Length: 420
Ligand SMILES: [Zn+2]
Image (cartoon, rainbow, N blue to C red; front, side, top):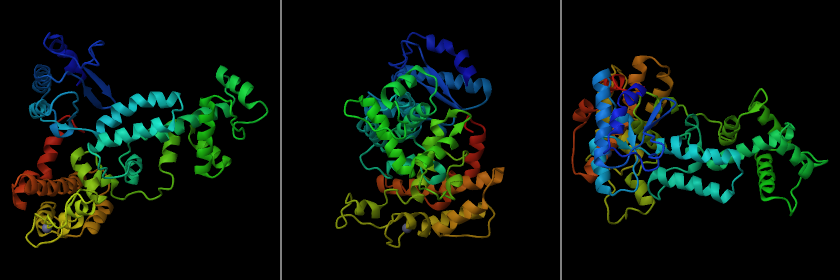
């Protein structure tokens, strides 16, 4: 991809091509972040057409194609019509989670690493990120759950509040070690004198920043029990004499969450499409907005709307459990999948299929990954069919869906594209 951009630099020299407004001064058109590629450009049709031209030029030369299912786009400051137009031009989905992880938290990490910010500000950052992720005021899962690692059932999104606490502990640890820096000598001379950092109390006239540090210290001591526990956890998070903020952050975030979710490797397999994994993750948490939940949240009026499943004709209430496994329609789709996977065993029970998948399909073998993909693809296909029936009055039978969303075909497509 790097070669593509530099070889096609001429496209960006084109006078009609417009850089992203925040990137035009430095003429930034793209950034690499680990194995992700971020492209920036102005949301006008010409610039986007140019970008598309570059991508297809790369495809022609290399024989590789972008996989729209693994790409996402984010736009702001333009009308809905133009947004829809751009999405249809690029055929990329709008991606929120990736943006939160790679950009927004990256910027604020700079600030939280270097300063102890007010709790109010940190809470505001976290709540803005949560609103942005869900794109509406209804948050399907709590920010606390989302911030837990994927192994523990979350999305592994960074919490500004907890990251700032971990960063403050680094400052405290540096003071504890009496590192030979000027500011540490100053702290010892002015604030500590005969006390150590674990005992000292803040005084009324102390600076705001010092009071913040003491406040964070007390919060962490309270959370981990006592000072010696805090010191033990800190030493676990040191590599040589370097305190690692991220290690301490993970200790705090996963504290009191002992159970690892057996299904996390199945749902978040790197070959699965992000949108399939995301919907499966919500389904496993029973947090998709099925009609029972909408009624419970009083968004649907029990007396005015029918609450039955739209996939079958048995007048069953639409719950997550019914929709994905108990429903006759879904059962037929699952049976197709099971036959395709050459399994004699069939199940229409949510818990046992998730358990079975998680315990029998571990490992990185090619076939195992295809089979894992089959689970997330099927959950996504059922949810998509349910939405199409409700919002677009379009229906398709399980056999058609199975042919269209067959994991073997998706797999084939994935291997020959940029995605891992
Ligand atoms: Zn049903």
